[in-house]
Image 1 (cartoon, rainbow, N blue to C red):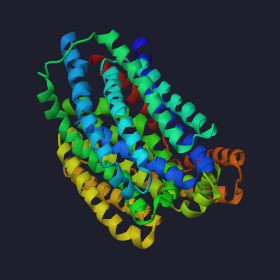
Image 2: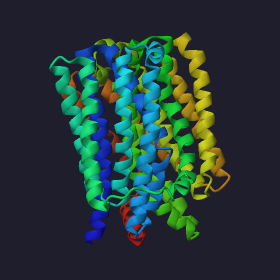
Image 3: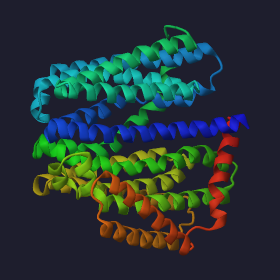
Image 4: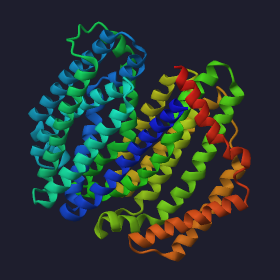
Length: 488
């Protein structure tokens, strides 16, 4: 029983971290936009997005290799070899990339539209971010989820405290970026000391690195393609329209992506349950889990899309500025629907994962990325930031459609279309109530959300959208996930 609760606790820990990450975004959003303006928030967003592009590349996909191979290793020397060889290789790749950024900082500043000092600071940040990413994965790989949680909390809370303090003390965006670097240096040395104590110190001979690279490198292309779909539009907006329009676009985009949180609990459990059932050829159970999981995801995400779309402008006024809200409130609905499609795509992609067709998934995202790039180049100069949101939605719809089509050739699971209709109908009624209520200010918005959730739940129950046997589904899913994980 103790192990069962530990399993549940681990899932809750990862969920809380995911939630805290979204909260952090919502904290930075009003502080930077209200105190430093839309243009500085645009620069901040470009720096974060660029870091998100480069850091996964510096690891060469070896984070996935650590997650795959280290947990099953019993020999301490093998664990040391894996962790330290990956860490050293990532350091030299990150160092090389950072030097390139510093050398070409002048040219990059002209392209990105802001002072080259920020690019030079970013170059240093990338080194420590890359090393921290490897060390944090190593902490996960040796199954120290509790420690991982506290390191992540220290990192995120440290960022919040230092960044906000530097801005309030009048150091501006320069001080915020320096704070971002400082907390990463602190986390790096804390993680390194912890890893030294946990697994000891060993200079690697790189005997495992070939196998690690063979496993990890394909993940780089998949991650890069997905990054292009979700983030490349910021660069085109900055290039064609100017950095201030990035500052308009990103707050609305960020609010839309909050809905991504709802997928995490299901995906973390299904990744454990489905492979076991599939390997045992228990296809009826595989289909049932996929069907029920999709239904419960839609139960939450559909009304969330409607509610977020209706409240978009009011939320942007609260979390950013009136100027930003007036320019970008129409962005949020497109991004919210994109996240809905991405979540649905996940359930179809699991069929391809079970059939060991991960290369197919990578190709789908690569084609979607090329498609997205082409649309952005053509339409952003003509139609502005709304075009970026529309092309994002079109790209997600493309990947969703292809994923659904290809997965259906392997096997299919039941989709409850009647429930989807009931959920949409209930969401429309709920949205009409929010429009009528017309909340103004954070407190009234919270009240409106609480009341609208109640209305949605009552309507779903009255329409018999959820049945008793389905209410037991999550309990059984969680129990089965624990039983499978405990045998690994």
